[in-house]
Image 1 (tube, rainbow, N blue to C red):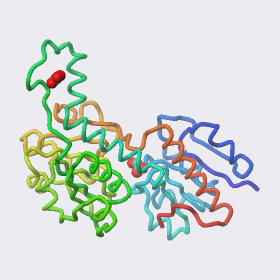
Image 2: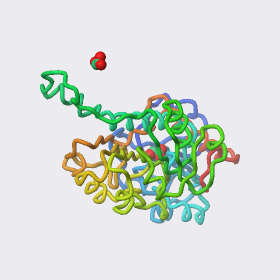
Image 3: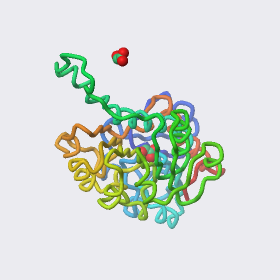
Image 4: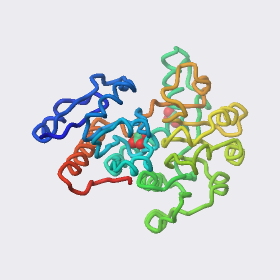
Amino acid sequence: MKSVIYITRKIPDALLRPYQDSFTFRMWDKENVPVPRDVLLREVAAADGVLCLITESIDREFLAAAQHLKIVANMAVGYDNIDVDAAREHGVVVTNTPDVLTETTADLTFALMMATARRIVEAADYIREGKWDYWAPYLLAGSDIHDKTIGIVGMGRIGEAVARRAKGFGMSILYHNRSRKNHAEQELGAFYSDFPELLQEADFVVSLVPLTEQTSEIFNQDAFKQMKSSAVFVNVSRGGTVDEQALYEALTSREIRAAGLDVFTNEPISPEHPLLGLDNVVCLPHIGSASAATRTSMIELCFDNLQAVMNGERVITPVN
Ligand code: GLV
Ligand code: GLV
């Protein structure tokens, strides 16, 4: 009998075709709307495997609804949407999608750093709004990226890929991480710093740290106070690493200069979100890994993990 795989979002049929012989697919039929919770709980009861997104909370209630679930393949590198301990207790394997999105996410991180520092969105809007009358010496003058100091908080694969880009820009590289990264220190000249020192020294403070109990709101009022008044804060990990109210206050009181944010505490944010009202903030709708090629690779990696479990083989990218 074919294994039943539930996919929590509509993905292109062409990606399903290679697996049609081994799997019976069931799929939520909307691309831009998450599956309702009651539908998800009903579907998981019949599933051997689930391909889910970060919009799904894989918690004890979900696991209790499952009857013969073997694997949850999360289409993301971060898995704070999943209760990994509970999954382990239920004997459910959890996989994520590292590696395939590393370079794409590092590209976006750099794009957001540059867009924020050089006021790219504000400048593009300036023309659209009919404000461009003259060239002027300090018109939309921002801050430089080259030769500055970047402070990377969370030196995983993406952190290292950002550091490689930073090296090309002649930046000094500081990083903070649970463990030392000898490779990055030797190859890229990155310096390990403790968290306060990084906050004090960096011109760009970049959050690439996974959201855990330990990293919840590490960017709080105290952290922003320690940063330079010229600092640019960039978050491409999870909104939960930031106290958004403290960030708002740091920006409005000019304790820091600007922020580039791809992620938020509660997503999606509405157009009324206070941070959107600030000129010195660039907000993006969580598109770190969003190149078409990389999103396809992430889905394919999920399928390869699902296939491995169904064949009784080792999964490629386990998290538990
Ligand atoms: C996206 O946020 C991911 O974790 O891959
Ligand atoms: C600006 O356009 C310059 O030529 O410096």
